[in-house]
Image 1 (cartoon, rainbow over the protein chains, first blue to last red):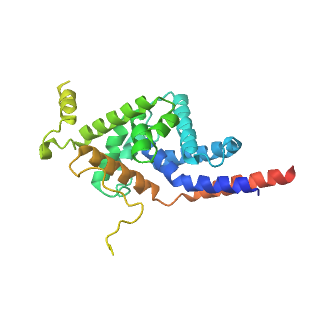
Image 2: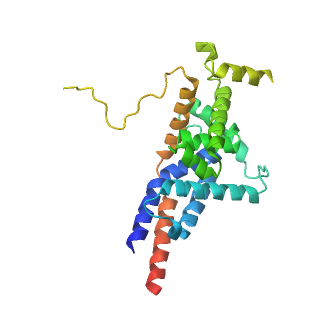
Image 3: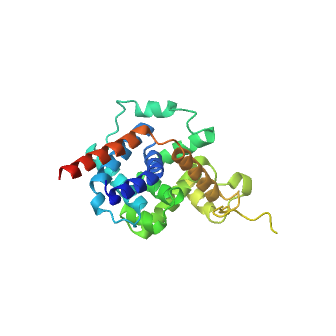
Length: 184
Length: 62
């Protein structure tokens, strides 16, 4: 086995836990996310000649996974089918998996976000990418990523009711936004 | 001697606890890391072994 291949495999393995967490956070289901991660590994392996050692393997893999996901969604025409009980299973899925009720509430709120807001806040807020890297992964402008992250934060605050208004009084930044949102 | 030195890599809290953005950020990271800390499914390790084996035998055949 040549040296390059061993290094590639080792680096890929090191990124896998985070890549899988990204997939599960995006999709909300372990089984579908793991299928996506498996497809991503195979794609990445086939394209490993294109990867320059020493550059950002994590960003490269996340980009492949994201492209795989969206091309799958396009193929499916984004139809919402419950043939395999996605939604019913979601409600009942492993209640102990995320520990507290709090965590389950958060997962549900995350699922309610539009896809592009969800991926933006995950990449920047949890996967550890800079805004610039996230923009590159999503193939969009820096300003677009920033506004998606901001909107995701506001929406999550509304969904989880952590605006802080009741406990701390409305703050200058979020109060106009939340009151506008509730007025409309 | 300062015995309360911070360990390297230990993070400062990003904002005070009452800040709603900090609460969201904390919950998001907790959720993500709970998944990231799960054991990697064996199927991925098996897959990488298989890909490795296929490639090695292809190279030998060349």
